[in-house]
Amino acid sequence: MSPERWYQLSGYLSLVFGVLASASVYKMTLLYYGIPIAFVGFIFSGINIFLQTKHEFEPGKFAKGYLGMFLSSLPVIFLMVMIFKFKPN
Image 1 (cartoon, rainbow, N blue to C red):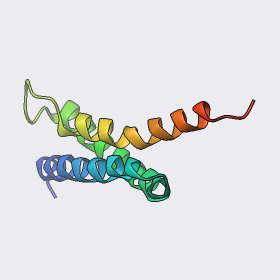
Image 2 (cartoon, helix red, strand yellow; image 1 turned 90 degrees about the vertical axis):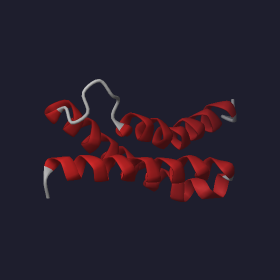
Image 3 (cartoon, one colour; image 1 turned 135 degrees about the vertical axis):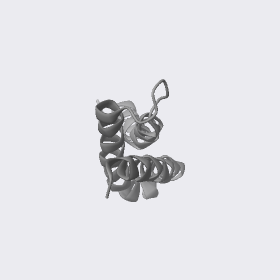
Image 4 (cartoon, rainbow, N blue to C red; image 1 turned 180 degrees about the horizontal axis):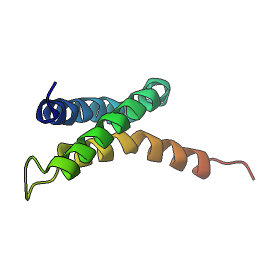
């Protein structure tokens, strides 16, 4: 597969996994599924950002991987806040 095709595919997959991961914040029990989904979203985001930086497919535009990485990081940040907020003294 060509690098441009990988770039497009990884961008859309990072967004899909990012949305699924951020939707897992809705219920605490869904975080068990959201954290592994966020990890996969991080991988696709990293691939997308790397290919954008290396080949400059869309000059002047941000890669979709940045938004995917932000969305994938929401469950991790939410879990950290819950751990530190409700930590017993």
